[in-house]
Length: 173
Image (cartoon, rainbow, N blue to C red):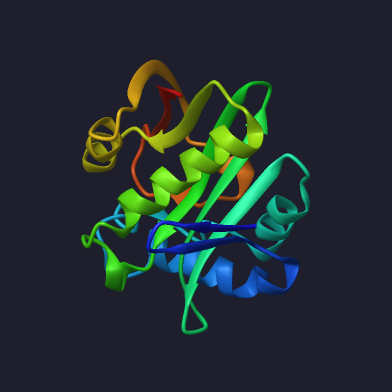
């Protein structure tokens, strides 16, 4: 499936795992870009195994934006009951701040509504990432008040600061 809105998003395939993993780690743990978490979390954000499982999961739809054979963005939409959990969202640091992220998120939401028939979008964000939470709030997401300890057991990095937590944001369709 191809999604259009001045950008083409395609459903990822398993032969793209390495490139997607590199993009996710660059966006979250690289040296540039406002979405990076390098000051508060060390280690990789994603592994090739995690990316492959997301692609192979029938309830998960990993969407990628590729231009001139370069992976520039990805976002995962996973249906759980009537909700779309949005994650692995990254825009190449070189392109951040140009409005591409807004378009990608909107396309992923439209995909979730049209293809998956969901009632609500849900995402999990590191609580200490205030600028990122504000970004999502400007796009209609609200904080639920639900927080948890940072999920070290999921192999998504190791906190550099004590008390690191994650919290849930939601947006109705």
